[in-house]
Image (cartoon, rainbow, N blue to C red):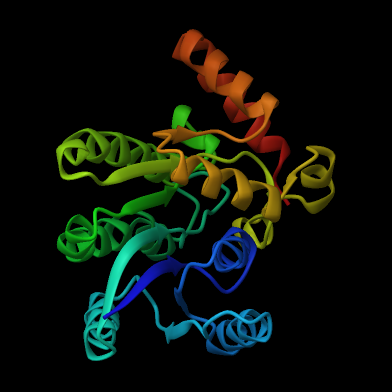
Length: 259
């Protein structure tokens, strides 16, 4: 049986860097994303470094039938997932009543439903392997998010689900971690519709640094991983600030980020 670490959203950004970090730590990988060409290129890169060629599965996780196909492919390859990294997700910037409704529901499908579906499907394998789960949320999970309402809410779900699951699975020997990065150099800002120049001024972290922090926290059994001193401070202040004050502050900040 081939024991794998499966990474979703692995074609670029934090997901691709997690693949590189985990391959370097001698994990055998399965890479999942929509971009087949980029997944193949990443698999080539990892193989060229002397590691086993990752299993490449191209598909859209927002579609349940493609999750069916993905899990069937894993079974046909004789694979057992011992580490699951739920990284796939996206955000949209703008007022909820002005953004496209279908696009916002697609966000929920990927950020919440697909993450939950994949976790529940693979949980028996992970429990058998006494493995690990890393869910990628965001510093947004600790805040209400005017101008990105659905995105912030989706990441709050990921945080809550992950923490609850970590408690439930303690007795099974499974470690569950949730990674909550702040601004990071990825394709996220462009897809979300954020102002590129302003995003640069926020001094985003590199995707590599976030991936290394996420992997280290996962292997250490850390429940909530918040990379960076500023992000840790933001998390603490968010918990101390009344929402009557926090809501207009976040709203003004997000309004200023509009592309």
